[in-house]
Image (cartoon, rainbow, N blue to C red; front, side, top):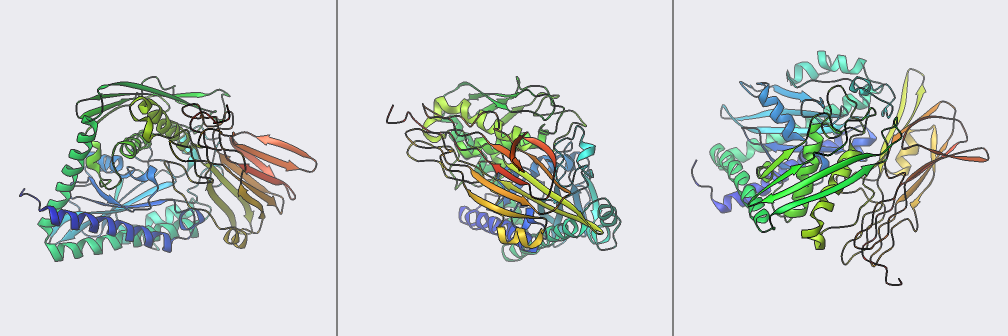
Length: 529
């Protein structure tokens, strides 16, 4: 391969990022469901002809920044990237074939120019429902089969199989409760990847396909060089961190996430040996999710934001995750609530690196999401509402934590109250506010969580949710205090009952459900102590 011109690399790097961002915007604007259109739980990406990730949408969920590479690697191992032709597509949501959890459906198409393959355009969207045993969320699942329809990695003809009368479209529509939303979101994903296909072809027409594909390879090499340079500047050594999850919904005991990071020369090894065995409940993180959390944690801590977030960042990493553990469960363990384990892994990595990077690290945040589903049957169908609530951000050296935000691995947006009540007439939002004084004390205070109240307007409403930090609030750093713990509270008549962090509860007319998320930890010893 001829040397890549640095000016052209800079121009095309920005172009790849702009294409991925336009794809993302088109996906969001075309989507049907609240979880995609309002919360924006989706991602878009451009890949090189060999399959490595080149660029993703700027506003992509951080957890999904590296969600594509394990899936693409699995597709390659199965021979699905060979002999592709125009009109083909790749699809999967299989958590045991590089995927995240079944709700996250990945759709990828090859892009051709002048008869040759010049890359891929991909999209991922968190579907509102894929047929789980409980509408939207099944926090009581013990097997992945109970979490929805599994789509193994497969090659399809996009228009034939996902068109209105396509075989795959018909099978999916018949197995989900809200086909108008799920199939609408899949069509939005198709619109996004068609955008990427068109824009990538335009780049090839302007600069030539060899320049475009050669620059992709050069960008991967560049980010690899930058990552190795930063690692080389850190002192060699072994660093250990541990975090704990509340529960799996069955055993009643906490689960340990352990990580040992070894820095040696220009490489880093992340070893998750010591993590507890896989859980009975759905809090396990499949290997694809674990790899994504580790890679995002290291990039966010080590690299400046201007370095491209492509797959070259990962070449210097050696990752060890023992099979049969919470971070690499054996099939068919349930995985729908895998974000809790990933958040704890992220925090354990930050904790491990504190001795050498304390000035860049923060206290623990509400390292979870309050994933909420409220559903009710209606004549001939189903109402289904889902959202993910953030909490308090941890404080750091020189600044207080932010209030009521999506944390570290996620940046889901707020779901407007007006839209919620307009489309879901079986409940109303009675209050939505910052949860005052829930942040940890310190020289710099942790951010506050949020509180949201759902007044139930009719019988037969089901509340399903998962969360974490219900036993202990997020830890402070360097003498800072912990944040307040999270709570699910059900007020019925004159009584109030606290619900567990993984819960399915049948609600009645007049009930008030309060969801309170945790505050972030404080940083530094409070001045008045």
